[in-house]
Length: 179
Image 1: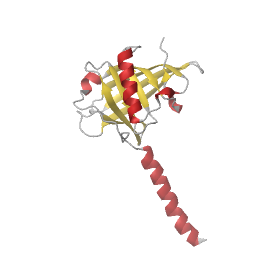
Image 2 (image 1 turned 90 degrees about the vertical axis):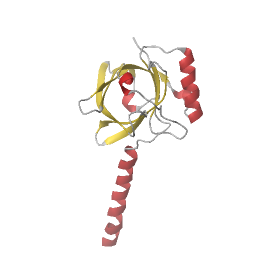
Image 3 (image 1 turned 60 degrees about the vertical axis):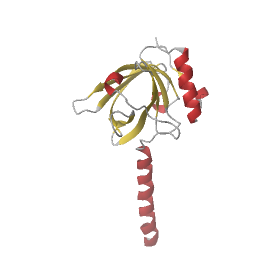
Image 4 (image 1 turned 45 degrees about the horizontal axis):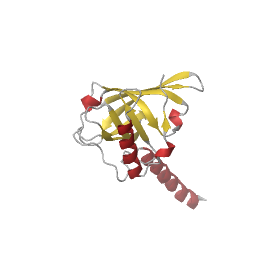
């Protein structure tokens, strides 16, 4: 029995460590490249979520927005809001984002539940910072954002094409309703 405990405890701790390490992944999907010469000041402000995959934490949400502002310590405050149309209530989640490398590379990590961090990678953005394509650390996470409640068809197609080329199943996107 003692031999089993000597083996089981380290293996259990190793598996737990691996789970925690994987949950803190701040990578970028293979084939994706974060925007270079990124201007975080221009990125700050309110964004409307135009499309996403069906994530557990955004289930049944419409009117979803993300507002980014600078914290006094230089990190970025992330304020996500949305209306749960099933429960008929507004939900809000406040998080923090930090740059993975240099602030001129649009690779960030975001946390809503410290110490767990997730990848937040802007892989396409128009020159006026009005429309953005954001992905997580894998092809399970994607968002199309806009400064307004709509997105031009040309930008939509550009983002969908880029996402498909990386391996995203864009037919699974949920197109968010905004009142």
